[in-house]
Amino acid sequence: KAGVTQTPRYLIKTRGQQVTLSCSPISGHRSVSWYQQTPGQGLQFLFEYFSETQRNKGNFPGRFSGRQFSNSRSEMNVSTLELGDSALYLCASRPLSREKLFFGSGTQLSVL
Amino acid sequence: GQQLNQSPQSMFIQEGEDVSMNCTSSSIFNTWLWYKQDPGEGPVLLIALYKAGELTSNGRLTAQFGITRKDSFLNISASIPSDVGIYFCAGMNTGNQFYFGTGTSLTVIP
Image 1: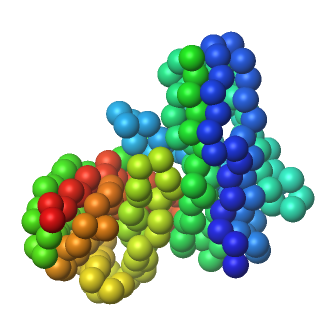
Image 2: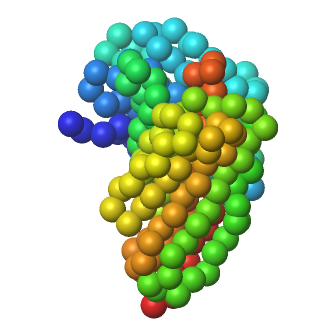
């Protein structure tokens, strides 16, 4: 079974731009969640989607948004990028039993 | 968001030594997970625990679900250089929300 796939692996953007990250969950997993990881803050929860609906949302500004498609693939969008948005963005999928989280390799975003 | 207290923050050990780390929470969890993360990569699931008192092994790794349901422990026996990385815990509460530890950075000196 293929793991969680995230694209792209690396991104360099400038302040004010917007970015879209993509995540394909493990086959059969319908829940996808997104996390921001920085050295100082650790793993911070952004949001979780299940069956195309946002189920939970973390404490991030509205510039961070996401969506999930009918095939469970998910995208995350960040608009009006700020320097502080530089981070490793991780996607994770959960099986129906919901008791495990499987992470992708992440997208390393650098905002200049 | 809430983060779990994980200790120690970092460890420098000789190859062959055993390692112990733990996570504590002020809340009860139904599930504890332990991950290893290499720089610039995503976390890889090592061990999952589902019952208070449960002891589970994965090769040289052994993890335990604390009986109070507010803590968990990870032990690595006979460390080798490829054990280097950041280890962190995750707990799932009764609302099926995951919370993460701050990580333990492990360095193994050959």
